Amino acid sequence: MILLVSIRGFAYGQTKDAIDSAKVDSAKAKAAREKKIADNTRKQYDFGDLTRNILHPKKKANPLHKGSGFTIVPNVAANPTIGGQLGIKAVAGKKLGPDSTTFLSVGATSASITSKGIIYFYLNHNIFTAGNKWNFQGNIVAAKTVTPDYGFGIGRDFYSGGSATDKTLADPAHQVYPIHSFYYDFREKVYKEVQKDLFVGAGLDFAIRRDIKNKDTVDNATPSSVYNNQHGFPQDHYSANAFLFDAEYITRDNPNRAYKGIYADVGLRINQTFIGSTKNAMQLTTDFRKYISLSDRNPETVLALWNWGSYLLSGNIPYLELPGTARDGTFRSGRGYTSQYFKGTEFNDTEAEFRFPILSNKFISGVVFGSMQSGNDEQGTKLFQVFQPGYGGGLRVLFNKATRTNLALDYAFGRYGNKGFFLNLNEAF
Image (tube, rainbow, N blue to C red):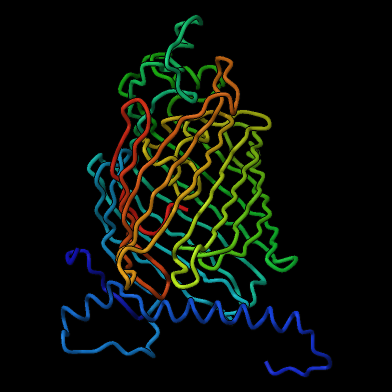
């Protein structure tokens, strides 16, 4: 753990005309809750404290010092999709307005290479201006990728009937077909607060994939080649360029590790050929997260709930853009399976996670979680007819208590022999 130590740190006056006792009591209760959370944070122990104790063992912590929101860390990660990952990552968090009226803004950038030959660079941000008047969300990605493909659908224990190409597309034996490609993505969305905690926004996304290669390049020999032939996509490239329209509702208290509140987003993605998309398509996406703190004394004792879905309304989308396992915005859903192990034109994932402190100083915490995925296929299976479970548990190591950044170490299990170790920064949702 010492080897993972990061380089840290650059870090109303009012006139009362009449007193509403209910509002006063509510304000006092809210202030008391916020004070408990603040007091709890001051008692926490993170990697910055560990670094100080190692390098300056006789130096005592300053209880009045507010930790830096900027951290540079080794970008160490692992999961069955990418293998082991090593790189460098910079993360930052800062409120750009008063604490009581402004959400935390976060950003991150990283460059990494993995044991499976993936090279990945990204830069992303989620910025709230003072008073939450505007919210800017976006990312830039450039990557050399290897995507394991297990066929189209939610998984079948047996397969009968249909043509040879149908069987190849469904891949009932769950044979893996690695797909190599170069991937570039530019996305930016701008939201305006229209009511308290309610935002509406729009944006653009340019998702481009080039030099797509399967080891077996014979037509209809792999699920992706069957899909591309059936839906009129080139075998070696595509673009999925889209207009984005979203509405979101946010009351969660922190995007890295929420103790309480709600995050909800409903969006339309409209791929259009006149802005360079290979095909026209329209998708509906939904993302709902609820966080319930179960303890006033230890507010990080949380029951977290998540439902994410994507549904094709019209048109056709490229094979590697199909919604599926770990195809949410942060690629963390469906732990226990590799990315896109299951996929369809319609997909839904529901998860629950119980989070709890282990050490009294909150340096080490634990989680247990479970998920249920459902999707359609092209052999007649409908959404919500078949569910595939995943479950597991893990540990959390507190990296930066100022921004609630933590190291997540999970071991998860799924069906068809799937299991694996998942290591990342921050919670899955």
